[in-house]
Amino acid sequence: MTAPKVQLLLTGNELMTGDIVDSNSAMIAEQLKELGLEISRKVTIADDLTLLVNEINQLAEQADILIINGGLGPTVDDLTAQALAQATKVELTEHAHALEHVTAWCKKRGATLNKPNLKQAILPQDCDIIANRQGSAVGFKVNHLNCDIYCTPGVPRELKTMLIEQIKPDIIKKIPAELVTDVTRLQVFGLGESTLQKMVDEQLPDWPNEIDLGFRAGMPLLEVKLTTNSQQAHQQKIYWQEKMSQLLGDHLIAKIEDTPLSLAKHVLKNLTKNNLTITTAESCTGGLIASMLTKEAGASQSFEAGFVTYSNAMKTKLLGVDEKILNEHGAVSKATVIAMATGALAQSSADLVIAVSGIAGPEGGSKEKPVGTVWLAWGSKDNLKTVGLLMPLPRSYFQKYVASIGLDLIRRDLIASQESPQYIIERLLK
Image (cartoon, rainbow, N blue to C red; front, side, top):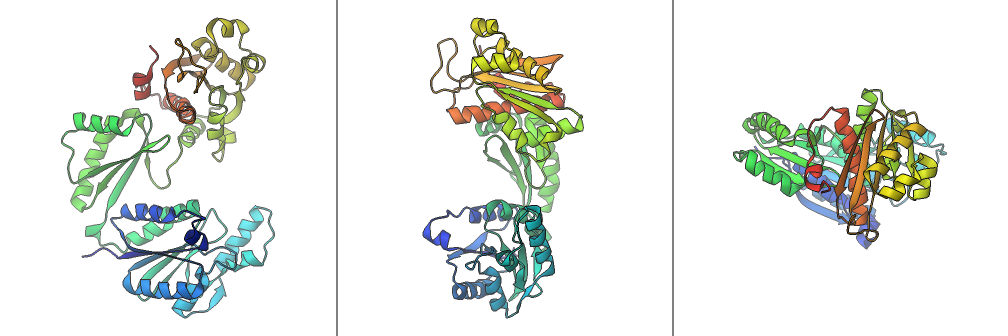
């Protein structure tokens, strides 16, 4: 038994001139790797019909699977559909499902359905549609020279969704069961790669070689991957995944089923589940927590209001923070974030709050309160908690991490966590 041979064709003048940096091929390779597949050949060419037709024919002769990326848009230099029709010797026709999609896409945005839009519904006859729930151009699939050819959009987020939700499940059917790679992906917050590796080494020293353990650092979430390449190892992984989950504790956000959810989305889901609402009072994060929440669709169901009170005067005017508290304790203090949180709850009808005030730097610190000092308050009116942390990080990283910590602390409350997260153990103010 051998795995299907995969090749990749990227098209676009912008790729050839360097106006666009190719990140899509890395994304495709990463997604295929989770199936145990590797790209044996990658070709990048300009928007030239003759070149496209020739390359499609050559690559299809040598591969079981060919992924074409780019050239599905509405402009004259988007030639993938035309090239596939010529290569497969079929007519270009108006595809009913593609027309329905682009019509709905335009209507949703209040745009006029024009001739360039309609071009995206003209596809090779009898091709199979690959839905695109984010963009105007559908993808499509044809079989040519016993090679399955998947045509995908060049927009990275559209491509990724299409790969995860449709193309990968279709490709899995072509892989012999004995060769199927199984990947379990876990979202983690509050543990770094080195810390987690140390925990594994010390607490799971007999981790089996048959289960490949990998880490992918991100901001704010770390991804832990458990990969197996045989049926026996797949069964063995069930036990070790449970061991890993116990090791991670409440640092484990979720198992990734399809597209990873953001930390804010997990918070919103738990708020909705518990029929609760939230407000924010931010200083050093400048509204980032509110932004992370409202970036998610449906946030209005759970998010009441956000207050960005950067100056002391606005802390007093908008949130009612007593000037005496600010004078005696300073803006970055336990007393101030409690007052900010209490004020935000009073000004809104929310059930829960996150309040934060800190010194993001690079200036503004002192011996008593160095750069990286931050106080957070979170919870409800009757159960408000606080913590002071020292996080001497670059300004933008500090803001993102502090905002994420605020969300994680609320998440932990919503799941009734009794654990102390690693970032409090390591960063607690002395």
